[in-house]
Image 1 (cartoon, one colour):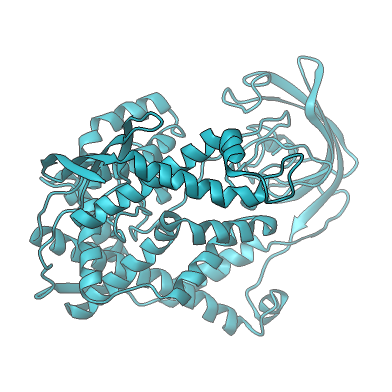
Image 2 (cartoon, rainbow, N blue to C red):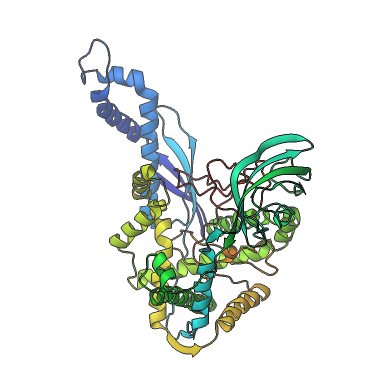
Length: 539
């Protein structure tokens, strides 16, 4: 194989490769011999079809297979011979090839930069610590008590009040015509919950068991069912039950109803959760300060293709979020103003990723086989049981898929290694002070001369992390948009199903007889577990 370098500029490389016709023909003969035992042809015993007939029948396909293998081997030999470390998959183009002639191809790629041994001495970090106070635990316990609210029967003559649970049959009409999904039985709704379209719940105040009542409402302009959006409607209601909320009490009996031994055990669980959350915030702040120091101490060119891939990942997430704002077009217009800032974030993330990878490799940091198996098993749980084995096989056979799973854990291990090398001083602060420090860190970096965010490291060139908002945070209002740890976030697109019930905001699990108003559909392959539908009748 002949190799000629045609470009060597910065991190860009290009080569022309010539694969001799004799090599290709030799591979074709090998393909024919390998295929012959499997070929079946009338008049010949299995495996006894002459090679010339095999070539005549399957020649084009065998030639294409042989050529593809020759190209793959040629590119691999090129990378090994020139000691190239590609940043992304090399681009290969077959320039010319005719049967019996040499194959000419061009190979272009970007290589990873040569990084001087990273300096990890002299790192100094401050660890802001928050103690989990009892009030935070009380808040969590009380919230759970409210979520586990139960209802009891009331006096049949009692008029429903805000907070009561009303169970009813309903039949809706718009402009005098019944509509799909507008009829249901035994629908229950808590008055004041805000689950129903505006005006519906308010008109339930004062109803009694046995009442039959007609109420009038107007569907919101942005209602999911376009044929009903903005239109008036009436609902004929038959009130079947009015239940009164029982006052929840945080005591041992409540804890036992949850399968625990005591209230003390429940509080202990919540305290552990609060501590874990606070430790996560502490780590976030330390990690950002660590990455700032690394970024300031190291500067080198990064492959543009990696930066572009990282930027596209960030941009797609931002555009998705902008599409869910009240005014999507305005949100996207604001987003465009910050494009350059996000490009800088992408460049910084790639540089830090390469740097962390280099530090990890230089210091023997690695993800063990056992840890990798655990990662694969955890990821497989996102899929339906029938697809889990297929997912595991896919990851085991696809190095890039495995690398993407490994990258976040690899980054964490490198960061932990660097924490162990740093001089750390502790300072006790309040939760508000810690959160303010994290927010101020974002704002300063976004408005300064260089844009920072929750940066991530990459194991080689793998990307599996979310982005940080910059400047005005145009379309990143959701918490997931800028995960505080700089860790990977999955904010899957949500599809909406519109039906006709008076529906709306948040919902609970629906009964079989209750039509859906809107839903969450996960469009993932291969068949991840479906998420629960969001809707109940009239929600």
